[in-house]
Length: 224
Ligand code: B1M
Image 1 (cartoon, rainbow, N blue to C red):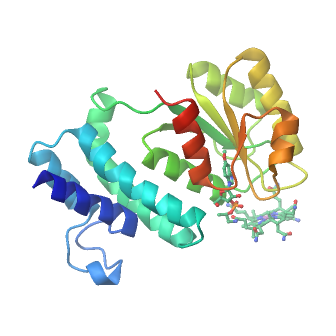
Image 2 (image 1 turned 120 degrees about the vertical axis):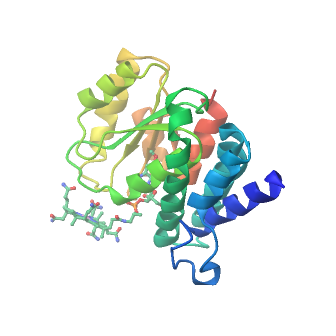
């Protein structure tokens, strides 16, 4: 019974069905959404960890993979993230109390001089959906601010985003500062103008062209 509920919940997240009142997606109109199903699962005694691992992460993972494969588009990911957020509202007390274990902490921002944040926000959503605590630094983030966030969150991995050829060069300063001060910190870089070659040249640990690739890399290389 609870397995079926968790499967339905995963579908709601993947399809972006936020709650019963939500008219989106049209073929699920009137049905319970991520909001109601999460409450129901917890009320039935399903553990918050199972809700996260067996439903929410599965749903976000599915949409992330489809996005990587160009089978869905940005609005689909945004709707999935909205459904995920509704569900996470019910899990927040358990997360705050430490009853739900996150996979790790991920510090992310757009590098200095760069104001583009849409792509980076998608990365945040996929990482959160993948069970990571996200420390969101925003846009135009200096190397020093990244470093301060890493020092404040021991063991955190870092994600750098850049959309301009003129700002991607600022990634190198950030990578060097972080790795110089906190050796061993894993840094993933991404953004439209980047390449694997550039990432290797600046000393980043990984390059991903999309959010799912960043999640997959960190799940394998950093996650607890
Ligand atoms: Co700007 N802009 N923009 N812009 N803008 C581009 C990037 C540009 C390609 C447009 C063009 O000329 N054709 C061009 C860059 C050229 C270059 O350097 N090669 C450009 C320029 C020149 C500029 C200004 C300099 C324009 C000016 O003022 N003369 C200026 C710079 C401002 C600044 O940053 N200092 C500027 C400003 C802006 C707006 C503020 C108006 C706005 C940003 C609004 C916002 O973000 N809140 C904007 C926008 C919207 C764009 C375009 C149209 C769209 C960018 C976007 O959001 N894409 C863009 C042209 C285009 O791409 N068609 C353009 C959608 C998003 C989902 O994709 O961000 O690539 P993306 O993220 C992807 C991947 O890259 C990846 O995952 C995401 C999902 O797949 N990814 C990561 C991103 N970060 C990742 C990190 C990871 C892993 C994956 O791991 C950590």
